[in-house]
Length: 233
Ligand SMILES: [Zn+2]
Image 1 (tube, rainbow, N blue to C red):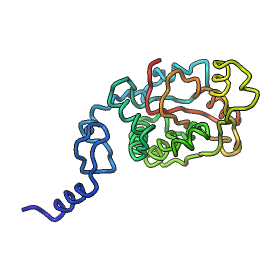
Image 2 (image 1 turned 30 degrees about the horizontal axis):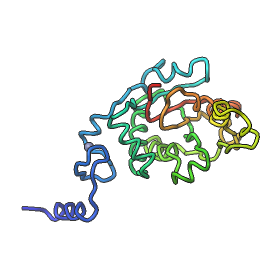
Image 3 (image 1 turned 180 degrees about the vertical axis):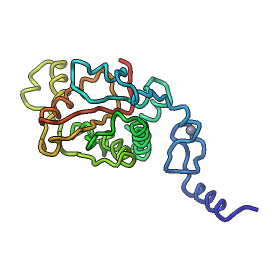
Image 4 (image 1 turned 60 degrees about the vertical axis):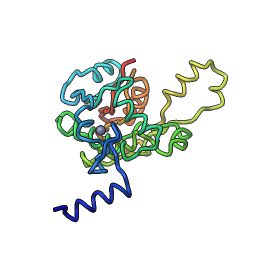
């Protein structure tokens, strides 16, 4: 006998079709965004649990960190690339939220991030955020916060837009100058706190280094970094 709930579920599926963001197969739980097969295929790094993991090593001698990790590997033509594309360029915020939850679970399974007091998303340039409609790092923070139950500090650090004097410089120098510029605007909000800085991808670590060192300028602040993926150069 078919139960009423099953009829309801299939009706819902008919009216609001929900499919896996990874492979397109039918999903019963729309919140999860991913089917069990795709979840199982996610390229986890397990870096969270290991001191001296490749992301931490990347920052040695550059930034004083408590812990650092990337939850997944990013490779081209992969499931992860497909998901990142949907999250960053196809307005799929719900997927970003779920990826953030997966980060939160990985961080919670390690005791190396448990002293964190608050999440700080790496800011985007205001023009870029306006165009995309959201900052992907903030969306990840929202998913992580559901698991770690930490506050999100959105406005403590900003990323100033291009300035007049920079237009006179060479292209590469100008890029470096703008890319690495952050401004701590609410020093008191992170004073005496252990901040967990969040971004979507770490490649060379240059942007995270610039943002992180500005956060450490607050004084008496401790810093950790977590990203959704690590990409090779
Ligand atoms: Zn799938």
